Length: 255
Length: 329
Ligand SMILES: Nc1ncnc2c1ncn2[C@@H]1O[C@H](COP(=O)(O)OP(=O)(O)OP(=O)(O)O)[C@@H](O)[C@H]1O
Ligand SMILES: [Mg+2]
Image (cartoon, rainbow over all chains, first blue to last red; front, side, top):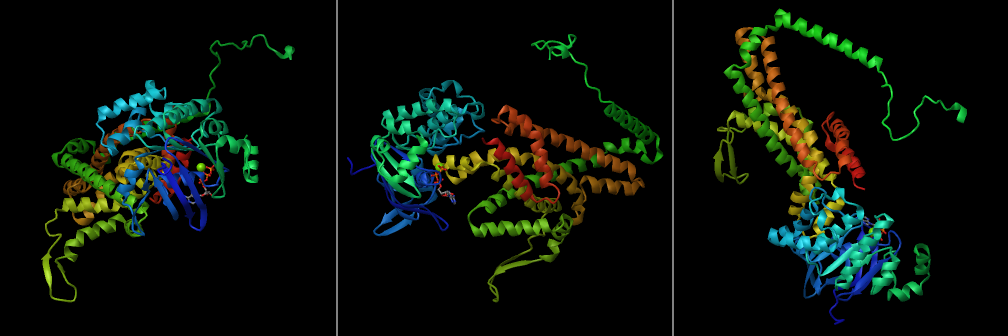
């Protein structure tokens, strides 16, 4: 079903003032696939992820998730801005994991996870708790349910953040450098959870500097520089045999 | 090296350290001097005629005084509640993307922080005279929908609450704004990425976290409000503690003992409010990592200092941002 991808981005343009951060980005991610996004700092990777769930609105192009135009409704040739409520509803189906975890520090791990399901999707508290405990079990942290995030290690916090995103039963997961803030010995436990998620068939877009992860788990790889996709393709091929000089020089630095 | 080793010095091991405590001779002398001065002052005050201690004892629990103390406390609490709600609204307006709301909030702060509270209270008292009647209609025509005297039936007590709250709201707005800005941006992003609405994000995520920064200076404001209530005679209200004690002292020709009575009550109420603040702070410190929790003390005094002198929270805001950065690793 290549005609019905999970994410279709066409000619995305994003400007901050006069600074054009994304210049004509086109990306397609099929259902159940893992797309990895690599590139130097400031190339616009985070901005692109944030455009996908409409945390940033785009200035040009079109972006569909699961066949729905994000943030706008199209009637004929005209685009109509969606209300904040409708945008929130679209976002609720897209999970996002951040470099700095962004757990809610004033809530316990369990409260973090059930907050959105109970408030946004009106799931009954009991059901939400049951789901949360299953998810915590899945990321190996069921024993930390009653703990505040400040008492967890970085790796544990990131696994909770993943569980929190999964609690909304998303159809797509966005990861923005999920292991970059972690001590080296903690990277593995987070990547393992992500691998498991990929194997379960989740569609994922992962911004990462973990080339090993991209090679092993990725179905496609996009190399981004200066707001454009310089090169893309099968991760193993691109990594082994980069065609562009910019890709080559970037890879020589991170490998 | 071996020859310099003194055999009487303990070898390093896990045994507890036995050492002679460092002495602080200067500190000790200072404490003794102060203690002597205090004793001398108290002794003198206890025996000095002018204080008229029997009168203090007689009026401390006078019905009029206790009632006035209760009214002062009520005035403080009600005007602070209103001020906090208004301050929250003003702060959110100031932080919104809407230029109209921003401008309204800015103008409000400019007006109410730029004029003395005493002057404002006098104005509140005169509102009834200035707006004897107000007519709603179409301008430059004779069409009038209705005419009313809006301030005719407002009780002086409530006018005092409004007058105090409107002034205080301007200061609370800056404190709340500093608090909201102290919450890392990632919190707002994480909440919105989960599909939470702006309202939910504010009420469930941002505001609770900003409380830790908001409460200490707000406690300061409450205590300062308690004392500001003594100015409401400016609009003609005279049942609060200070006006009441002045009235009684005028009757019995004794100023000092009633000032002491008033001070005792102000101190008592302040102490009660401070206990309340302690528990609130403890509640909102939950989830803060243990070593951070012990650090909060100097941070709070720092943001106090920055907010207090001119009442502009702007300095307090940036200060609290700086401290919160440290917390977010
Ligand atoms: N809200 C914003 N306002 C103005 N400029 C922004 C904003 N967000 C990002 N930028 C700019 O857009 C450019 C791309 O930023 P982005 O965060 O997307 O890069 P990145 O590829 O994720 O980099 P990194 O690897 O450092 O995370 C940068 O030059 C950044 O300064
Ligand atoms: Mg980034």
